[in-house]
Image (cartoon, rainbow over all chains, first blue to last red; front, side):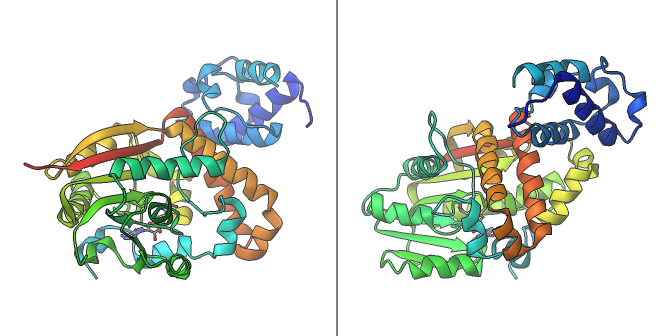
Length: 81
Length: 291
Ligand SMILES: C[S@@+](CC[C@H](N)C(=O)[O-])C[C@H]1O[C@@H](n2cnc3c(N)ncnc32)[C@H](O)[C@@H]1O
């Protein structure tokens, strides 16, 4: 199973988030809460699902709420590997 | 067409979902092809957890030797089969709208097992039942887009019919996916995923909330046990998805890539929705009211 660096995971989260919000990646702030973007909970769940497939391992979708920004989630997923 | 059928999913919609072929479902379900949330104890595998789920409903509905059981939405018959073999039930009737499922159960050829290709609203039993179960079928009892009142009416007709078919003191055990009471259906319907589920996974179906269920049942049944086992469904869906991925080539050959991709997305996102509580998995045991 491939291990991903925190930077790689962060890039994957940014790509998913930008597409979920239909905005350019350059407009994202890695420290901003997902909530503040107005991301509906089911879209957050789909984002978690995309990460699950990217990482090749199962992710509890609650991680999105427990680590609610790009930076926090990337750190969490990189350390929980 | 019965009055009730008009407010639930049509046989055509059900058939489209479940008649995809026995071989396809056998690829990712357990050997009994139980297609509903399992009940895990510790690190049970899927087979053990499906058995535990069936046992829970047999226990709650009071199935025992000499008792007559009706299973509404029997799928491939695992529950009625176990009622007869493991509990020695006198008779177990299963209802399904899927011809493929009915044919499979009929092929078991057990004298005390009966399967009918019939809507519960049209069922006319020859004698009262002692126990009724309905696992993973309630999701189909109200069509999409109904107002809350109309939906509760549809559920009330279901409970009233069940009560009428039960002997005094009879018990009913149901299992269904549900939304939280405060769920915003309109907002959900407007999401990509909401439209996807409505159009591609469960056409013509909508989900209840726990208060709707209790309100609809209240005049004829009292609740005895209520469980929300949503984490069990997240686990079940992830196992199905893993297995479907392992058998992807065979699955695509049987039903086509689009259907396989649709189910893959459905399992993935519903698992996450169960993780966070946007979806609930309710198991509710009722007793018929005496007054
Ligand atoms: C998800 S499957 C679950 C089957 C089975 N109980 C299990 O756990 O595997 C739903 C079942 O409900 C049946 N069903 C849906 N609406 C029904 C209705 N109005 N009357 C009778 N059966 C119905 C379908 O044909 C199907 O067998």
